[in-house]
Length: 386
Image (cartoon, rainbow, N blue to C red):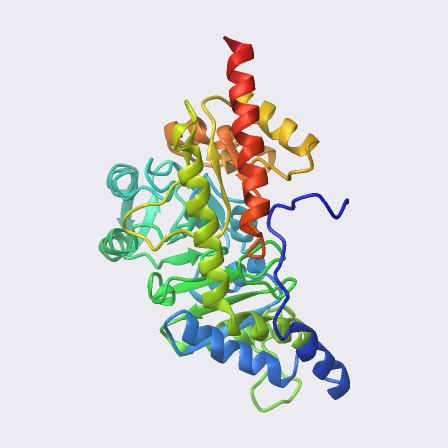
């Protein structure tokens, strides 16, 4: 890749990352035990508004552990929006359950509470104190809202529905670091620290929550459910899903600059939103009023899928990384037969999204290069079409 190419969402490693990694190497603590893991869990809990966090090897493993802790079992249905990265559904299936896919609301592209309540009232029944899906007979095990682009869903409304129907809520907040009370928006909340996230460990994830016993259970399940006394006794079927001390060292350094990273992401998002205001037929990505400003990816919504593809192709030809976004899960081959609602909203938006360079280190000058190119391409495309 040319050094002149403007990347999409590259990590900003300009803090203490290198120093802390060197400290790990010098100490010999490079695996899943070490002081940086403990420190990262403590600092992450504080950043998400709680006291308990369990670091994991990925966001996907965090989702799996949370499903297990909240009692999801083989054969269950787990409610999730179709408009999400496929890891949401894959974690559900790894736990032996099946996703029940729902459309999203049109403002924030998150799980639609109105659709959720009406569908549960119409398509489920209580049997022996458990909620069952009438058509399949399967028990409904949990609700898993997704924090699209980093925006918190309508958590109060979803939790009220969950209470009324006796369901736990597991938040797939993979890219949602930032909101100060994030850990309290669901019974357990899962994060990802992949390389393209606002805060990265190079990989990794975490389970956070207000109940320390649940979080500790997730931690034990991610460590082969080994007995607390250190003996080789394991009381549940489990896996090694632990984060390494090396990854945690990077995460600690990132958390030290979290406010700076979030501010940069907000600045970049605001500049794009302002710049596209006069582009005919184009709109900004969602920023729902009930959530803190999303701080993961930036981009635009094109008027048609064909326009989105044409603009993205030309931007990439100019050395500017422009991408597409999630293909809904119900359109993915492994989940073609999963139960689902109508998908009017997600089918109308998913193929019109163009993601634009939004690395926290992106300078205003480099962003201006992107904006100028976008304006020129859009206006040229519109002129040719006319």
